[in-house]
Length: 450
Ligand SMILES: *Cc1c(COP(=O)(O)O)cnc(C)c1O
Image 1: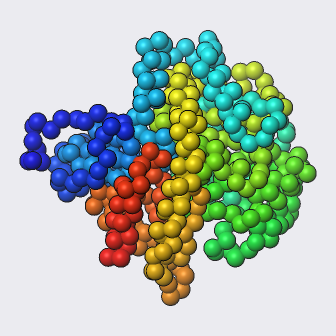
Image 2: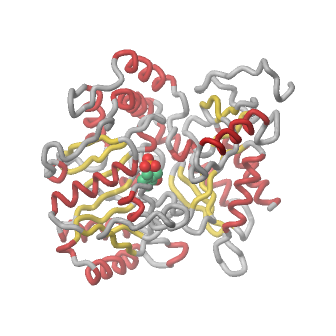
Image 3: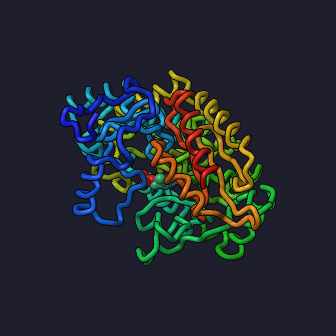
């Protein structure tokens, strides 16, 4: 087939899309290149991209581009299409809702689907205490609102975030995010009263969970004082920072200290939530019950939606009109969320995430290559940290080269990490074993060749 074949038709997305890796051009092909040229002329350079294609359809475990290439998806659009792209339930729910009404503004004329999503989140998030949920549009907006809610409840100003943490790109969430390049550099000044503490990073700090917690708590007490502290905000498994799983006992010790000191503990589950790690929320795996939980990414099969769920007394402390937004809890996004949550439950996707985790961990751990410093993560949120074997120093060039080579071979794989030296695997839970295995083969071949 000629690469500029005018008869090339756009396939329909969803799980019925041919589940295969298929390269009919180099990446990018001519049609994709055309879009990238238009992008460069119309969209600012600050909005980057990792995979140089023009996506036209996606589903199951593949993304198809405008040239007819079919790429294996090990990224889920950054842990968003966890149920799979164009999931039939989500497609049907969205179509039905958009034909009914697309917007009233929940703060003007409420509708049922928003309340139903709130009820679901109240039920599914950890803890059986009385809860409330408010809906927003993005993870950053959820985190901003969690901080607002905690400040209003406590009457205190300070917020603790952690080293390697990522919470978004708005002004407050830039302040809460640890890494300067590319998220913050040149975009300040940042919001005040944000304090950064060392996180638990067993591969690099060699501390037990209780030791790492004691270190952070001692710094909090000395530098801030509990009386001034509204909230401690942390990702139970740090995402952009490198899929860092804290040592056992770290999170429970922080939660206990918060409880003893009237500080609101916020779990940012924007990346780790919704079956991704093999349970509804990663917090469950560490035995913690957060006061507030922020959610987004995997919540609605790709539609923009986010939530703050938490203890009723904390959530209800904000005055009427203090929380919300024009689009927050949009009815189409809420319909998608209800369908997505149903899919997680009915297809037992948490179990599928655990299976995928076992496959990824077994394959990666079996590789005899001293440049892999650590394989870690939970469920379908697994990463390999690359190092210089001689010194243990981070090897970001290697991670970048492996990802780039894999993409050129038709496998979408993402990097992350404070040092940029981590390859992360976030496949949609709708991917088949064969495709997952082939994707891994290609990533590992790229590593061997690098
Ligand atoms: C992606 C992410 C955010 C920001 O979400 P956006 O929807 O991009 O605003 C916040 N926290 C965590 C942990 C994330 O992974």
